[in-house]
Image 1 (tube, helix red, strand yellow):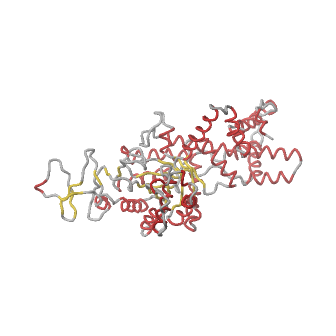
Image 2 (cartoon, rainbow, N blue to C red; image 1 turned 90 degrees about the horizontal axis):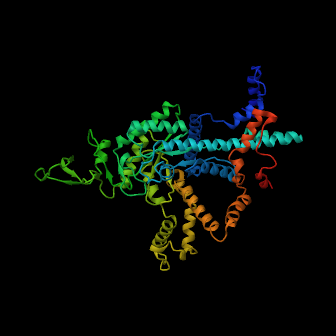
Length: 530
């Protein structure tokens, strides 16, 4: 509906109510446009359609991959999307990622916690709601500035400018984009997963990522000690999330099934099996077992049979069972196929390094069964990208027969190598990693889980070093405020960003000429108008 149509519609409603004195149709239309999304479910339905369209576009051409950055606060997510619109003109194929790691480390009432699902489960859904509150406010702010420009053009009688601004309002692109939200291992059984998934969706999440670790043994994907569950347990949780989407009317909602099997060498339970070759039997086939004779059985031994043989799985004092070494990739492939065959839409394979060959090899095996299998991939800050890619280049060049005597493979992180041909080649491979992996390894969505955690730490360290050192106030002015002005960072007018002008507009709607507004000539934000 166009801006003018909104005004006409509001006018009809107001005209039918004789006592609604002072209610202006255009003000109502503006407020409605500034609050396009009424509920989180509106957002989830809208963004799920976007993701479905983007997945179809990727299937047609892998160059249409998508990206996101993890954001741990609504303001950071908002500023990211404002920056994207400023620099690229569109939010197309750019999402937000909500990391359970950052919620645990930064948003728990217990204080900083490791990524072990110890934080309050509803803190994640609360962050989803917070992110979308800030994105909706970004819409309201941007449209509010358009409305002010429209009023100025009307006052000056510039009809061409009036038409241009009205067209821009009619075609305004929202800052609201899909969020891929991390539900960890579901924070409990399938019922707990279902209940929490509903909270996520009601807050606006269109895409929920869930992993195949044991809830009460959950570890960060890049740490040791990970424990997986049998497929039927994980499939039950995938179904629980799907039921939550369907119950709430978000039929196009998406599920990302994450497997940690590549780095998980343990399971908490032996899978139930009904017949040879079923999914439970396949899971158990990876257990590390010793063949035993009946006479050699010890007290309390747990046994299984396979191909007519009596086997004793290796059982740890923790009561966990051990998988055979070297089976991680096979287990990953089986996990992925089972997940896609039982309701998941996208895959996440947590790897120990960013290597296109390794990822692509697994994806090719998965696609032999599921041709359009697609990945969400963590471009993780847990990887030492510089060292990994310098070593990849070193290995490739050495395999080509080059003389590598000028390089020490174990010390390639050293600054001494920064200006070398090898370092330049490694940086180029890092630069094109997402594009290359989208084409060669089936990666539909690239994300960095914790980037804003690290950028916040880095920028704060730099400011503290300067401000509390010899630079004093110049440390802030030169490195922060002056850069905000030079780079046209919207937050230099922090009162406007926080909603002061929106508040002034509302005061005028509500009180007319009696409104006491903040944005007058004495407002110090006017210093940044030049």
